[in-house]
Image (cartoon, rainbow, N blue to C red):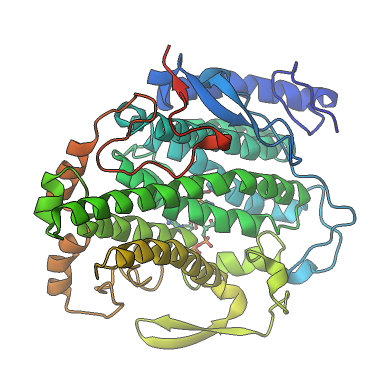
Length: 469
Ligand code: BYC
């Protein structure tokens, strides 16, 4: 497939030969650009940003670098290459040829999942839209914008599917994706975490570590879908998603590194002294981690879910890396769930949300181990840790249960008293906000974060990643 960049919408789906679809998407495009101007990082619209743009799906094409003004970024539609003779890898249709069109009886289920996925993408851009004003460096500013434009492209990916496969309903859903807004009391985003404000960079790095990682797992499960265009779209989105999690992991790692430098310099682990020196104490970092991890856990849905069972049965949504399992049908298998009333054995198909959540938690542990090695090497015994996945839940069987970070059910009054200590307090937030000062001299870093080990695309750290207009 060749790519034609003289087209308004770069794509590898042969849009030029589908005039009706092309017209529908070209009708949506100005609405998207209006939304980007109103809800995106508009203060930087005339700056030139060193961005990676996808111009194809192969090893060379997916990462083409250069300075671009964000409103001129080419939001294109790219699906990973088609796998010849692909068959459905799980559920009741296991082994049947993958679908190129959506089976009529599954339309509304597919639509719901595509809309939910699509809704998160613009939500995150809205959540982050003021962060550029307080960037700790030009390197970080560029990474923020890279994440933002790619989330915009991921919205395009879902809107393409809605327009191409769902007719008028799909076009209405695509409009509605621009009508809901993060945190809007009248018309909020669909999932909880995407309505939480991200008004400082510590939250941004936590979000890209924990919430984008939910994205990784959800996209992996949709990359298994029996509906081939959805699977191919998600496969390509995953290549971009990896960078977002890199931003989170290295961002938190660099904050921890700077904190440890200050602790060493002052020879103390006293939070007040560390703060007075302009760095973030590990306890504050832990409280932000508690907030974003527990919020992101809810994004997997309920432990026992008939929706997840039917998504699996119908070939809509598989398990991430389905090929790692032996049984792809799971009609007789069971799963032992820990509920507040004890162990409950449920049909595995009904526990798919929990299967995914458990893999997600394991993946989250990797960064924690890495940061803790840094802390240990400096000689301190203040490890960061993930709270129990039962703690502070708002969805599922542990919802609203008084569970402490160790996973133990405790007295409700004690829980309510202590919860405020496990999460960022108002004074933590005021302190973190007080550190958020804009640094825009190439190579310079704010005092609360260490420089990265290397720059983008083999360029030096002090490269001018964003050129102000
Ligand atoms: N908040 O049976 P249940 C990403 C709703 S992140 C509010 O428990 P089910 C990204 C649910 O919708 C990945 N509502 O679970 C990251 C349902 O409502 P309806 C996003 C919630 O149905 C960073 C009801 O509760 N992708 O890409 O299996 C930056 C009962 O549901 C929540 C996806 O989510 C919640 N946390 O749903 C940018 C993939 N959890 O329909 C991007 C698409 C559940 O009965 N979505 N509910 O009114 C799905 O696969 C599924 O819808 C869910 C689980 C994962 C959300």
